[in-house]
Length: 143
Image (cartoon, rainbow, N blue to C red):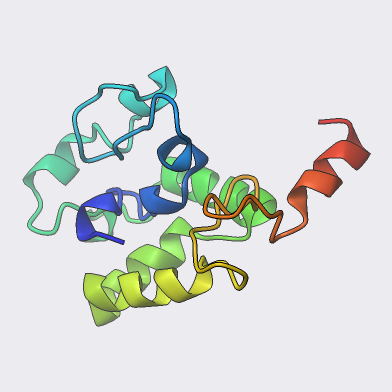
């Protein structure tokens, strides 16, 4: 995992299924917009003027942190994907980005093959196993 893969909002783009997929791999929020979804390109948080001028490039430096948009995004990710952007940002602020990367690498490592597990679908993109059991859950609820 690389520091450039941590988005201004605290999302670890390295565990996003858009980045992990084989075709049209998203390069991450901080990279050029090639292969990104429209929602990522137009992301209000990523394109926030405050982020472009603050020292760290992360939302936690903003006087409005956490803003309503970040809170809304964080709530959705905590509920659906068991991860928190705000927790990640607080961790970066308190311990540094390198420590967050270590923590994230351990948290999202496949116990079977050591590959990366996507927070979105729970699949290990190394061995294909449904590590978090979300594929089965999705079938049950009709998604």
